[in-house]
Length: 240
Image 1 (cartoon, rainbow, N blue to C red):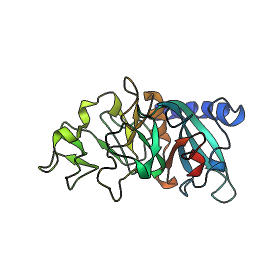
Image 2 (image 1 turned 135 degrees about the horizontal axis):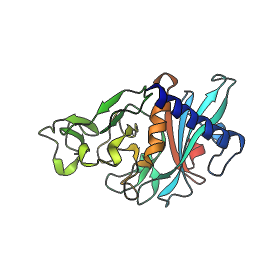
Image 3 (image 1 turned 120 degrees about the vertical axis):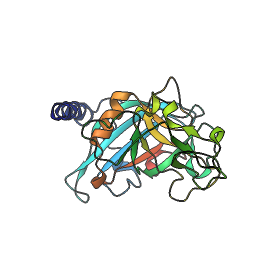
């Protein structure tokens, strides 16, 4: 465990030297400083696409060094990312089943996965079993919630059996879109997860090594959030 953690820190340091010192393509060093809101914590994930119709873009994870008031945001890591096959749309206007990724600033309630949590993971982590579902049935009392055993009012045809997505849900984080007070019809099951064979149905995905690094890095005591948006325009990531 200690060896793996050391390796993860070394990888993080490598990304830090690339993103914060060399300003490599895809690592916009000043992005969080230009945002309207970063969630109030000292960790932030940005998921940025070139335009609303894009299904690919970049995820970068950041830390605020030196304190909330006088500190400075530094890029810790960065990865290519995928979005919904139909691009991105404002979270407040999104409709379920449209294969669009909702833009906005969201918390990250907890992580989950079919595999054990990567070494160093501090977020609450829930292991997927063969009875684990994510209910997406608008009529269910568990709409947009994990269900350990499918409830009677949640149709399987309207939900995801998590273990069926062995590649994508090897590791994942719940994105707090439409989560605290779910609006029926707006969408359910929006996660940050491992890449599958192509674009997503509305989630944000990254390669497995990047997902493992994010999980080992995220610290719930630092209140991490994720901001999703485009480079410019009405759903530009800087608006959030």
